[in-house]
Amino acid sequence: MKNSFKDYFANEMNSKWNNMISREKPLYERNNDIRTEFGRDYTRIIHSNAYRRLKHKTQVFFSPNNDHICTRIEHVIHVESISYTIAQYLGLNPELTKAIASAHDIGHSPFGHVGEKVLSKLSMQNIGKTFWHERNGLELVENIELLEDYEKYKQNLNLTYAVRDGIISHCGEISENCLKPREEFIDLSTYTYPNQYSPYTWEACVVKIADKISYLGRDIEDAITLGILDSNLDELYNLLGYNYPNDKINNTIIINNLVKDLCENSSPEKGLCFSDSAFQLMNEINKFNYKNIYNCKRIIPSNRYFDIVLNEIYSLLKSTFNGSNTISAVKNMEKFYPKLSQTFSEFLMNYYDFGNRENLKLKNKILFDKENNIDFYKAILYYISGMTDNFAIEIYNEIIGF
Image (cartoon, rainbow, N blue to C red):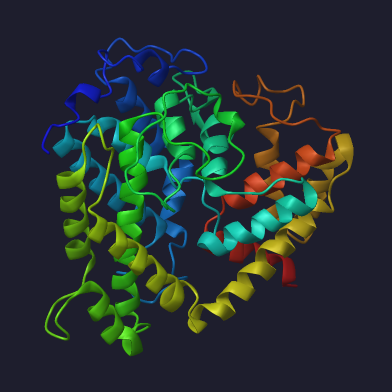
């Protein structure tokens, strides 16, 4: 029902408020700043380079010739829009959902979920831990992504707990209906796998559900546009209960129906819920998409290519580790791999202590020990995960070219 969650709005009256707005350190103050805590988070996110790079990262389909096929940035904008609509209707804080949604996929690797699987395999082999984009997103906003302050020093984003929690808690693979937030104010570093805990706020729960609503419908629309579902349209229309071929299937219709159903069936007592029929339909659409879109034969060749690209980049960079002399080893690659050498050495300089941090205008965290090879392997994964599809391919072509 409309405004049924107004008593749980993320504001000063909420018992969780001080935890929600807590940061690792105080933000620098401005005399003329009119933004809220979550408003400042939102602008920090959209001003970051990691956010900007989402426009050149795969959502589902790699390098489509059609400009109207969804990329990662468009998906993020869809989630932001859907979560705003739901929060506004239910009486929750749309400014918080906006900040979470804008950053929820910021940790995605190049080449979508296929790239994520490749990096996870490399991470397990070299570090002993899996790589997953929700966790990587949290680590990115906490440790990797930097912004210049008013004195031109690079600093970490230092986002609020509520936004950071929403990033790592957003896993869109929802197996349960009726989602509620957890009460515990936990250390987010205790997360060991996706969907381990419920989000801390109702707003983060909204983003988690909006993520699912967004990609189900849009992936179908894109697949229809690309002709991938031509032989499955009868099955799809039957699944959706539409009249084939007269009814229109597109993202806005699917989104509208699911958002309306969620808003009508949710309450603070039950949680954020779909009707049984709508939840069953979502699960059926998800199965259909996996069978006919995500695992279709058309994308298998590109998946093999992505595996080669990311493995070759990782392997070459791994070979440069030489303790305290690693930066020199990376720079010595410049003759043959100028772009890789320059960009990776510049990346490393931000997170190691080489004694010149003041000259480099750095006030961010020191993350890595120069003598620790595991730290270096982590740095490689962070660097690669931040690449766009095009940049990863450009680096790969540099590696194999003469």
